[in-house]
Each structure stands twice: as structure tokens, then as C-alpha cells.
Length: 219
Ligand code: DX5
Ligand code: ZN
View 1 (cartoon, rainbow, N blue to C red):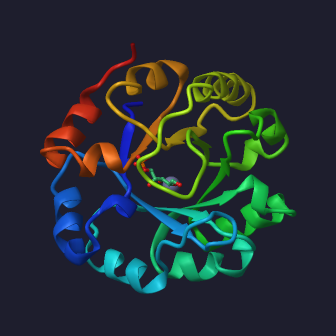
View 2: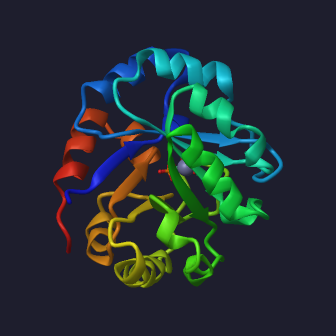
């Protein structure tokens, strides 16, 4: 499968949100990555339902919603109703992860689990068969524009091997510090979906950057 690009709306210009949404609509990008932060699970607050609604109104590609919040179970239905095509919860925020995944699937959305940089992929072995995607955080969650943590490559290789045995269709998403410098290695390691904020929105031409990212092959 050709890898997917999911520009992170967190890096958009919120005073010109419609313009940036239209840019992504007209680009080679595949999904919108939507970061929801509660100021408790991560030390930052991003945005909530009013922005989700604005996004849904204009976005012509699937919304990939990344919940960096405690008690995500409380909001799954509301995010699905607001237009989330995939819902990602953090392993570290879910005591009853299997139940949370069931609740996501009940809404019709794809279910994804995210791992912080210190959380081993091996902890997912018993939940892997029922997941659509795993998100590997390649920075500590909370902010865009941080530096990529190289150990991520090892985690992706280990996860890819685990998935080959129990869930070969699993998508592996990588989020944080993704750039054209590390994408070739990440593709070779087994990553399928690339979230990128700063690399796209601070580029001279975000449109061209998305196209370049889409064209990169494994190195
Ligand atoms: C970080 C968020 C990311 C962030 C990525 O906590 O989950 O999605 O927007 O931004 P960059 O690509 O700038 O690291
Ligand atoms: Zn994210």
C-alpha cells in the first residue's frame, strides 16, 4: 500500500482555517489529522467541538482524530457524531482499553491506539487483532514542532513484526517530528500513515511539500 499523508491541523493558521483546509483539500494529502488536547493528559490545550464542526463543514477528506485526553470514553460518541472517521485513544489513558475500542467500533469509526515514546509496543499484543491502526508517538505529545525521537524506528519494526502474525492489515501511523529527512527510513521500517504539522505548514509551499512527502520511497 502507498503510504498516506495526514497534515496536522494543529499547525494551521486558525485565523485562516478555511484557507488551510482548502489547501489540504486540493493537495495530495489523504487525511486531516486533528489533535485534541485537554491540558491534563498533555500539558497543552488545543481545540474542541466548535473547531471540529468548522473542519467537518469544509474538509473533503477523512478526519483522523487523535485524542490526547483523559477519560476518552466520555467523548467517543460525540467525536464520531462530529465527523471523526478514525478515533485514536492513548494506551496510557485507558484502563479498560478493550471496552474503549469496542465503543469506537460501535460508532462505525476506525479504532486506533496511540503509544507515548516510552510505552513498549509489546503491551499491545492482546489488543492488536481488533485494532485498525496503531499510532506511534515520535515526540512527547502536546506540541507541534518538536524533534523526532530516533528510537521510534525500532518500535515500528517490532510492531510491524507483531502485526504480521496477528493482524497483517493493521496500519501503523507515526506522529511527531516527521519530515522528508526521516520518512524514507520510517517507510522502510513499516510505517503507513505520516502525520506532519510543522514540516508542511512552515514549508515555503505546503502544497509542494505534501506532494514531495507523498512521493518519497523507502530508503
Ligand atoms: C503532537 C501532536 C502532533 C503534532 C505533530 O502532540 O500529536 O500531531 O501536531 O506536529 P509536528 O509534525 O510539527 O511534530
Ligand atoms: Zn497527533
